[in-house]
Image 1 (cartoon, rainbow, N blue to C red):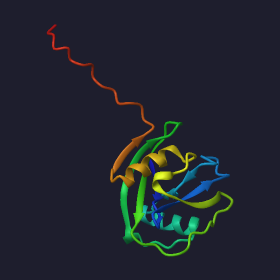
Image 2 (image 1 turned 90 degrees about the vertical axis):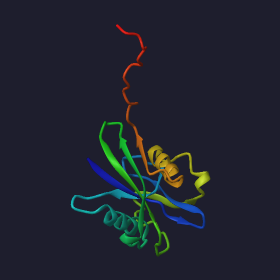
Image 3 (image 1 turned 180 degrees about the vertical axis):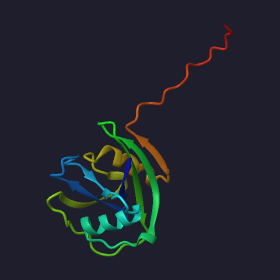
Image 4 (image 1 turned 135 degrees about the horizontal axis):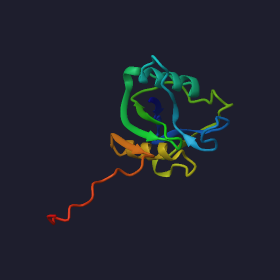
Length: 153
């Protein structure tokens, strides 16, 4: 199982989202600055790297708060953990450093997120902003034991 990191970058009450293109996954949909955690890499190091590589922002791993974890299963049945970090501080002006994969960086109010957003990211982001620390996405409903009728057989 693997993990990816997502950054909840806020400025003036708005959230930074990027519009994906030419990636082969969720192209034309908005997402947070995000990426995979490489083998041997810590999650916070991955978050710092993605912020720098995708948006030109400098973060400090010690200033990242883990605000949400989502355990998700994709349409192929593969599962992973999405770790959502909120940096307490960051420096730099967001700039699109991966124009081949990103059609642009845009700011949105949390109560007016785009409808064309990766569904599990929207789900997890909404819960993270509400202070909910954990969620699941894409799994079948849990199997439950039949209700006990109370009758002895």
